[in-house]
Image 1 (cartoon, rainbow, N blue to C red):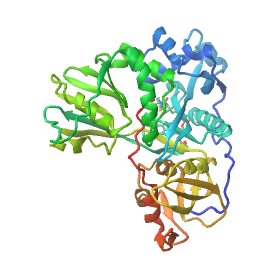
Image 2 (cartoon, rainbow, N blue to C red):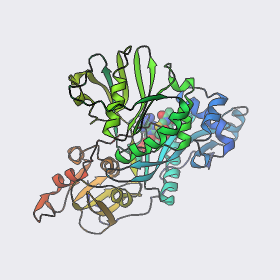
Image 3 (cartoon, protein in one colour):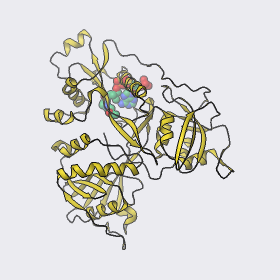
Image 4 (cartoon, protein in one colour):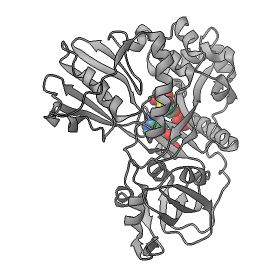
Length: 437
Ligand SMILES: CC(=O)SCCNC(=O)CCNC(=O)[C@H](O)C(C)(C)COP(=O)(O)OP(=O)(O)OC[C@H]1O[C@@H](n2cnc3c(N)ncnc32)[C@H](O)[C@@H]1OP(=O)(O)O
């Protein structure tokens, strides 16, 4: 990685022109049905009218950019097409995400990204993302996040894997809690109305203690709790379990209990909810798509192998647009004072930043001082959440120590740069998003 001496705060111009005849515009409410047709084609399903109506409260058209092919040939070909000439869609939800030790930080949750198969590999995705990223940067949104359909797409746009989902299957009959593990109780079943009143508030408290957590608006909860048949993927409707500090929802699927939401704001709630899930007599397997990597569940059992990991997948990808805002918003395991040189070909995050932080707070500002660490912008996205160690990124050549051999420490003695930063960036818990979008 080559050092670049001068910070470049302004975004570089778009590198890919749109194909002839294709234009970008913001969506309007009238576009939503046609967007649903285009989105359904890209992902292989049909939206019913009810599906479109259900989505309206959570899809804000103004946050979406549409690519339309207005060439004469295309307009003639598209007469009567319910997608109304839309050949590309990209948009976002208005989220907040939790950084290690920090409060919620505004983030654009990029979603609904597709380009018509008839128009692929002509630069339409690049143009749409460029449009969105410029808009976020101009609005002061420091971060964009997404779930990627394929792992090869988003690194080139500055996104790095920030959280990992661990899918597990719990062999319920083998999953015996250790003697002495308390029984906090306090779990009750509820109907959907009560769940709708309780779950959002518990989820907000869970977000406050869980790095990587993605916020949910009330409209998001309303949508999730509609629980339409297509949301169930062949399984039962949701069963709702409430605890004063927790919420879990599961579906039954031929002897398997599929946990679809699990949010515990306290350890008591975590234990109480798991006690109930593990007591479901007629269930052979309890399946969870996204158990945090450091979830204590296996340690609560006499046989930790009752919890088997069936998959590890990237979940949240993060694209830092404003390193000073992102790094200044999180907390650090130990005091740190270092200069980071971020390399961002698209310009948004490019430059040199001095980070002074510790367990109680941090500040990060642009600087001309000599850098201690060079890193690319996807690596910064990973480090912001702390789910990937700096040492791993150094081994992969995505970050490189430079300049001073040691960083100052409060005790006076210096600490090797890589080790000191590696420790400082570790989160209090492994990051976990809790919501896919
Ligand atoms: C956040 C989300 O919503 S994830 C969902 C993404 N959408 C899908 O998977 C739906 C099906 N796929 C598609 O709609 C399209 O193929 C898209 C959106 C992935 C790509 O759209 P396109 O307009 O073809 O991409 P575009 O031509 O702008 O390509 C930009 C760059 O990405 C690369 N690229 C595009 N698609 C892929 C891919 N699937 N895998 C790897 N690289 C890709 C291109 O090669 C190009 O690379 P370059 O910058 O080195 O030249």
